[in-house]
Length: 118
Image: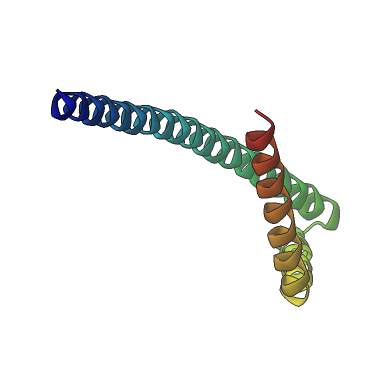
């Protein structure tokens, strides 16, 4: 009789573990779906923002060309503007990388606190 109860306990425990694994799989699928959705949206928004900025600066270059009565000075001025921006980012890349790592660590900590609280 005790052996039968032990089998029943093992079956119940096995069922519980299988259920927890299935719940974990479902939670992971939901999390992955949310992450992929956010990634796709960020990519789309970034793509459209890129084209807006690109054509905005092409317009600025065309206006400068017209004002300077030149075919190329406006484009060179806009290119110089971006070259200066590139130089600034390259010179501050360590500070920027540190700031990004810090923000990610803070976000992870907030998520962990929310998980603990729920």
